[in-house]
Image 1 (cartoon, rainbow, N blue to C red):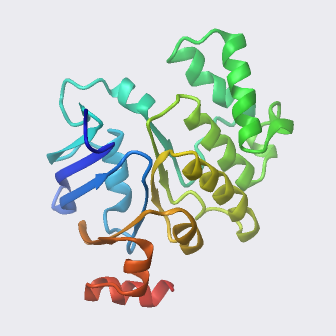
Image 2 (tube, rainbow, N blue to C red):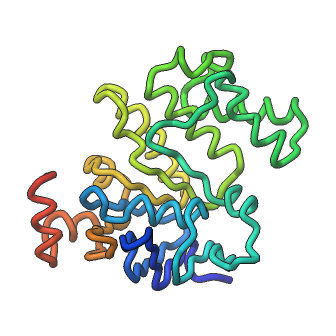
Length: 244
């Protein structure tokens, strides 16, 4: 049995001459919540995208439990079932209701019968506080509501890991709390989560670990208290001066 839920070992990713990830190493325990911070272009989103194989590493390896994501023989569809991903811009299907956005993967990927899929989707909408929106289309929902539907859709696959790529950065300030509250609930329920965000309130309330990245490298890792109150690295200190 794997010691960690996520293991990233010597991960490198190149886009032409640009090295987006440089020898990244990170271990995340089951149920751990990890906040990834750093300046724009530091490799945060690339690291997340490599975990669910939206990008392929140039070298190095990533494991989810005992499954090597980076093995060429690995089943991409199975990986994406196990690794839920929530994007900055929701990525909902505009022509489908909230309910159908959630049931689509259940019926097409998991071959779940329609009635069973709808029952599961209704439970998930209730879980994110949107029971009254099941027949509403994304264009009729606020940004915060759309993001909560996106979280429910990712949870529908019963993932082992949830990845959040700047989930609140496209939202108006008053809508951020409703999304962070859902994420806090997930953290309390023991979901393993990697969150790229600069929401410091969430970090202090839910994160077990903070990872600071710059120029494709993991520069510093520690508890929120360690990283925010007494960072060891000068690059971390300089970055935090701009956001705290």
